[in-house]
Image 1 (cartoon, rainbow, N blue to C red):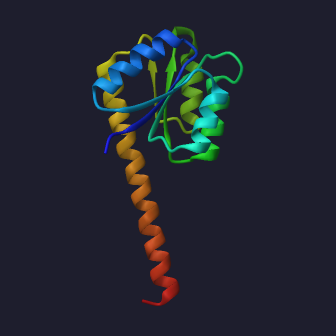
Image 2 (cartoon, one colour):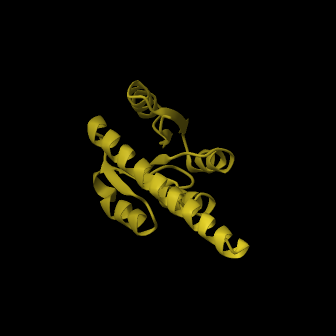
Amino acid sequence: MSVKVLLVDDEEQFVDVLSQRLQGRGFQVSTAFNGDDAISFIEEHDADVVILDVLMPGRNGIETLREIKRVRPITEVIMLTGHGTVETAIQGMKLGAYDYLMKPTDTTELVEKITKAQERKKEHEERIRQAEVDRLIKTKGW
């Protein structure tokens, strides 16, 4: 099963190029060009990893991150940041982002971060499943 990635950035050419690069490496990529569209997507679909630009018009990356984490707490988010917004990306990590990367992004490094983020999401899902099994065993008295 391929990793489901949502790529969110207002720079359409960047999104197109990065999307092609990630698809060429076997990722299942969906795109959004602003925070509102990203949130609408997350409400309707599951994504393993969201690649989220910090600076976007309208709902910025931090506001979008907060809402993604509210709707889908275990979805991992990697923040993309330009030179002047590293502090904002760090703030994003405090709010639950998995990591951040500087733009322009090195595709190999991004692929590694996506893979590690997806592994962390799978670990969270497994712990949740195990807790549910344990709860059921306790309540049924098995």
